[in-house]
Length: 214
Length: 259
Image 1: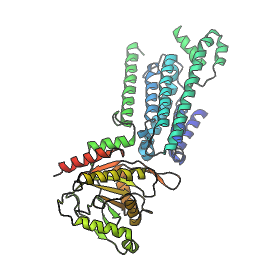
Image 2: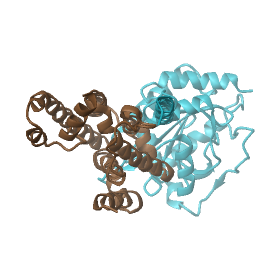
Image 3: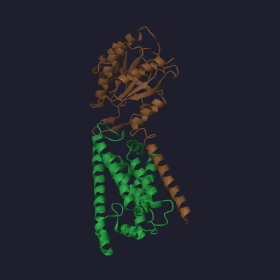
Image 4: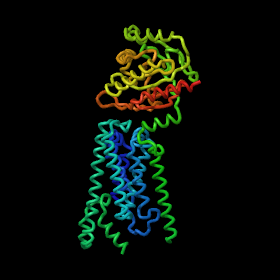
């Protein structure tokens, strides 16, 4: 078992089974900006690295089903009612953790298959939605979650807006840099893009995409 | 893998992802209808009314009764098992001698002798704690307006108001009577109670979908709404606190529809 996978399992166990969860989800900010992203990350780390043979796509052609489901999972846990239920019910808390872990794994397996267009679609959708959710949370005159305070809602909304914007901008600038990277030699290209695979289209991905189109 | 098999497995993958996504989002939004817990609760209650549990509460005069017991009529919905009025002079002798509560008691006694229909009334219920300085004050104001409306339109035989406190430690009959006095509650229309036990309180909060969160500075934050209970003892509608007019209309409809 790789160290990456062990780290993922450790994060997942801590966030699902220990009182750490209760501490984090006690605030809306902790729930939306710490618990949910970390569970997604844990799922990402636990899942085996994807096979390099892109033609054997099986149930996940072009990574579309995986990214669709991941986007749906992330959307679900931005719904105030779902957040309330995850705090008040143990079984829903397990549903939340389970879907996010699976979502993280699917993200890892679908990202490179999706290609620049699929990735743009996914990032565009998820970050746009998160940013809008953040704006709505900031502007809501009343509490939208029955389990959280209104001050907390303002913090969570602001955080969501900032993180979504940062990821969106980071991905977009990386994406803009791609054509320049393509004109370079192979060695230069891999060093020109340093974003982790989850945030921007990676150098490995570009070369693979080119290989398949050739 | 052949091209055909790949197409099929791909289609199965896409189909499964679509179905799972729709199921998940539909679950979270209660069929793509709501985003918040409160809205989901209101929607479910409107579709399938919920029977209010039989629990003991102590009124602003110290008497222990069932939560939906209508003191003015001394009746309660036929469908519910009767809980006999139980006065406990031994528990709070200070309260029974209190000037405030004696006033409430006298007014209530005069009301209960009023002749007229003994048909149970529809009830509009809200939840507060009397130390609350935010939403409960607003609720008190809304109830004052509703009470005036009921008086002016002569609806006191059809609709009454009930305020339930969830602060068992602080809201004794004396605090309730003080809150009633501050908001000029007419005891024949508006009664105030505190559940006798934590268990009773939790049952009520669960039934009405009220979630109480500590605010970190010694008080609580809670979702506030107007809950309409029909004369049969069923919670039939939850409306926004700013919409007293709708609450009253729903309560009247419920009263007219009752046998």
